[in-house]
View: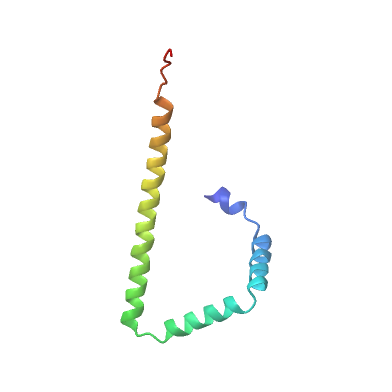
Amino acid sequence: MSNFLEGLDIDELRSSAEKILEITGDGAKKAYGKAKTGYDGLDDDTKKAITVGLCVFGFVLLIAGCFYLLGKHAGRKEQMEFEYEEWDA
């Protein structure tokens, strides 16, 4: 993980993000502003419910990703062990 973080070029990431914001124009900024205004207008219980829901959704995605990778690895391993038989026609 530390090797991945050391290999990041912060200036390149910043310039890429600025390019994306330029391409989208003010649309991304307006969408963010509207979402933030709507979220700030909610009561505390609703904010907590949204936070819990997002955490559960992220956890489910994490588990599904693990099962996907395990299944992919098992399928690859099973594929390697399969032997072909030659038949005389």
